[in-house]
Length: 313
Image 1 (tube, helix red, strand yellow):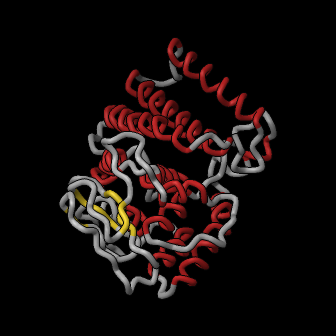
Image 2 (cartoon, one colour; image 1 turned 90 degrees about the horizontal axis):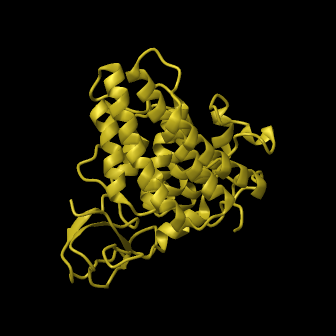
């Protein structure tokens, strides 16, 4: 196990895992202070979801194998669904979002982190389940980065030229830059200004708390997802918050069982009927039949054409 950020120690990770199990046990027999059973259920659901997200971050930061994140992500999406249902009952608002992404920068960041994990771990099924919680609350078609993260892997997304939070401007510009070099520069710029932009986030500066603190890692997963989806060269990016090995995992993904789908190079036969996308061309998502030859875009500024699975719908 090789840790992925210098601030995290093996002892911190060990303490986190121990306390994680202790909190789960505590929650089985104790209730949260609240004014009603509905509020208690909502607070409990939020706490357990937040705790699991921290476990995913800690697992990745500590240097565990990337495959170990997949079952945790599956559980996390379920936790968000539970959180939304309990919050909806408490607030008496059936379509309420579990995250207020327009008002709170840290909640928007949490949203794009989860979306990006679904993308980089090649789980469009989980992505669809998570995004519906946001879409039904009215967030569909409102934010450029949100939509640009989704348009490659989900059908019928929106083309929108506005976004909620200025911190994401360089990352959005990296998608639409007129040269490969400029896209890389903007991606790097985004990574450099990412951490300072989150001074108000509850996790900011937690690495200064020492061994007993709550630090579990700082990760701009959305930067990695955009680099993967849009074929941006990240070879010169070595900033701590950039998840480079997770991006490489996404680019070289190999399924763990026969029911999953890997990438297909251009010129090779399609391995499964359904939708595929390639970073080599904008708006590339299209339907292929099994056995159909995957096309190449020789004039692409992003280089070779590699197709990635995008679901059956």
